[in-house]
Image 1 (cartoon, rainbow, N blue to C red):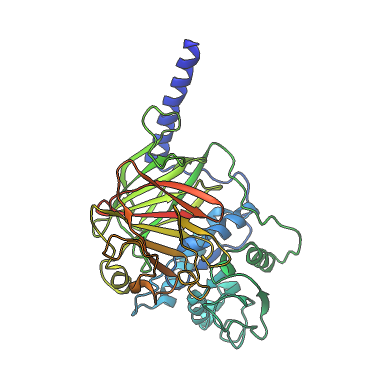
Image 2 (spheres, rainbow, N blue to C red; image 1 turned 60 degrees about the horizontal axis):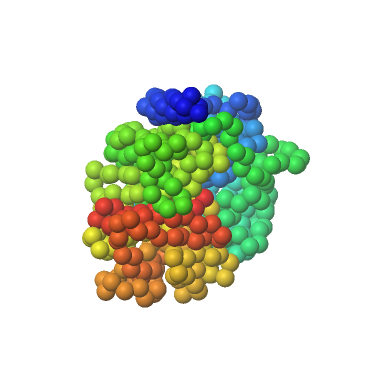
Length: 439
């Protein structure tokens, strides 16, 4: 018996050392098998978006044999004027072509990103770099992309997209009309993946639309830390990673067999980070920006290697800052943001609640709102009215609800979303803003 305990303890120590080496050395596990003959794909997000909008589709492509190192996201400042985004996109594509040694790429644009891609492809010098273009949940165009409509174009749109209401067929393009998908789902859904896969590969055979679980005990996690909507990187800002117990929201303690801890480290110059993690882990990312509020991010276990995990901090200036400037910063209450990465929360279709307080109500989450991020905080009277917060009432994709969550040490709250539950601590808003992500 004592020998068994000794062997188990030794195994746990070795596992921790191995994990620490993976983190500090930023080692990544490559795919065991993939098709590097496929053209690289560049994905462009829309207004208020970031690269993680494409994480599920990238994981589907890699589940079907595409090499992960040939799948790229282009981040742009979706609320900042004065930038030549087409020029920035061209520079990015040139880098992708150089890195992959490919003559062309396939390009995908969603929503406002579709407008950027069409503008980019008007230049003949740009158009020759793109083999296929997919236009998703974006404005109707008169013809396929390119100065002479020469770029093969697929147009995917949904009749239930309440943001891009004028979606319609593009003459001369391959048009895919959907029903039931909201503005985010039209970009992230399995049917959209199927359409893109067949369009890019020319194959009509059966494919796997599931996200396959990565093999092995560990998975590769990577991504960026950026400012919300602006996508300015949190260059060299500090963060650490903790593992939490989903049953009670508490951090695993030292000595627990499931305990792992990533000590304080910093993001790269471009806000990037990456490490290996036990694939069964619920994680807490504690982000301390040099300027602005601390953010605590909570993630469910990720099924597959994911290089597009994004951590967003709040800007201190600009449009986003003005919308979110009244978020409390005190010892009395918790501030919570619920982020649904792949679709909006829509009353009558989805179920969202915190403890006994329903949130997916028609006055809070109508289809026209297309809310993917729900901010919960008190409007100043330390009471829960459940009414919309005025400062966020007109903001697209963001919802705010007047909920007073009393900050109590050793107390927890339960968040329910479409049959899934996560338990989190009630942190003081003076410590930071809490964000839970449902993938």
